[in-house]
Length: 194
Image (cartoon, rainbow, N blue to C red; front, side):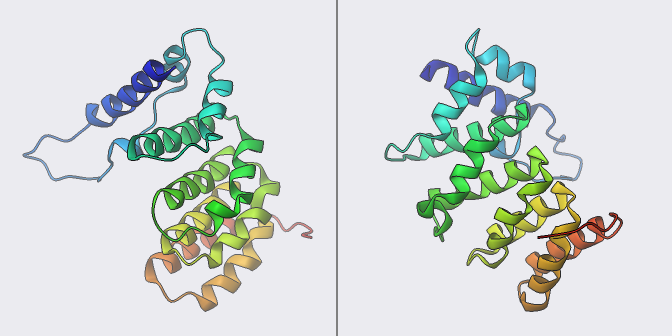
């Protein structure tokens, strides 16, 4: 199993470096290995006949003491579940874990951010409610990720909480993310919100 995880991490690293610009041209993005995702076929082949969703879920749910490498693998597994369009309940469980939700730095913050981004990637419109609380998280990165995830969900109901947070937000990075989200959601047809 560990060998397969290393293969998966290597695939992610290889895909991240495959499209790096030539040094003589300006750098157009600053993606790192952790920012790239393997394709669905790369994920499936890395697990060689095993159910990748089950294997990734086991990694995500791991609560063993985290070292740097283990955190990176866990974050990659969370993102890979999103790439496969699976793991919805697992991601929601992470977002309800008080150890993660109260994190202000360190590895728990990385795991929380990956879970928020993945929930947006899964595009279940009803998921806007759990994400709203993260708009007031102490970390600006978490607030930014929550705004982007709310935008990705394309739920009209996220507009009011985003507007409310925009009025209170003092960090430009977060204000820009909220503004972008509001612009994306403004074109949606109105719906009843609870």
